[in-house]
Length: 265
Image (cartoon, rainbow, N blue to C red; front, side, top):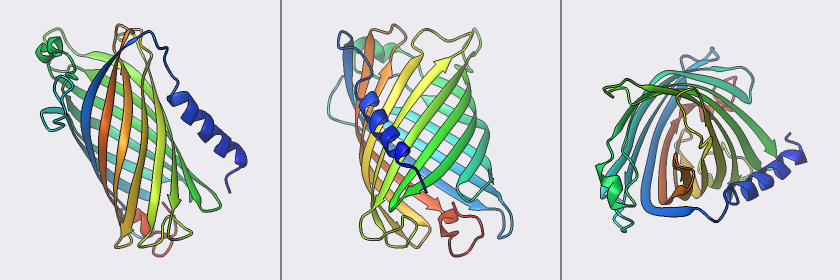
């Protein structure tokens, strides 16, 4: 059972994420459409080893207009291998993920900036906890990033640490993993970057999301929500403010574990 201190941490993180930067910076606004497609399962019914894969596809508006499908923003593919250490703690490793990212386009001068191709290695720790009917998730990610792999002068390397706290609240049942459960989802995430080839905008990003999800077929979930994201540019005086819808499709066969498997996801 999660302690009350985790609830307090969640509230503090909510406040922190919405009050992260001073007001004397220039905010550059863009509309966005984010999607994420995820599938996972154990290799067999008696093992703690699992596989995962996620695909991310994103679009953005141009020059602050309302057409979120106007320009590409991100496409990525990441395969994972994972191990279920305990019923509520899971460690995943993505050896190599492939990312293709466009710059954000709130200004005309941004239209000439090139795409960035990136290879990324990620270690991820998920820990699940419950306070009554509330499902909290603490997610830590450690990323090693090779950015601009096709640059004539070679790729730049840096590290990034990410922490996300997510709250999922069932609305028509008392347990998130029950079939036909309608639920609210809310998370806040902070990104801290560092490394020899990195600049000075160490506290580079945060994300704030609220959405509505539904579970069906036991192992399939969909979510639709609203994302408010802040990205600090390398000059530390301009912030990309991205706002728009986020769609998730989860084929998390692991979520059937309370019935079929020994180790619950």
